[in-house]
Length: 159
Image (cartoon, rainbow, N blue to C red; front, side, top):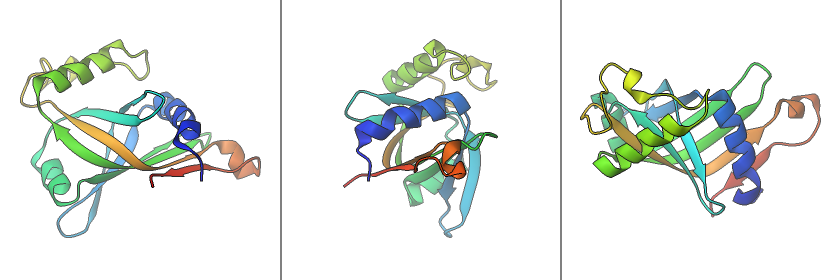
């Protein structure tokens, strides 16, 4: 198993290049639901945290109230793959919402964007805007070269 310090940067490199992730939740009946979302990741040398600015829809709220975990998958046509299994927690406070809004505003393209382009979001304090914090407990990074037999995937799981 890989140490988090050895997988965080390759994970972020793939995630931030691909930008959009398929994110799955589970409903109260145990059925998965997948949507495409735009996470941004921060690595401080010790911990990896993901952030998603999103609408706190009744469906997302119900799913995460039932099972507070998500599965994220990044894939591109070259077959680079990065996956994360995370605990997801809602944040509605103005400070966190402003901070994450600003993360997206300051990030270079293609990762960065102006969240106000979403019609329902005029600013980070709008009730229609919330933040999901992602705390991974399992990561996997598989560059396309692994499919050609060159190298092995990187895997990490929290103790």
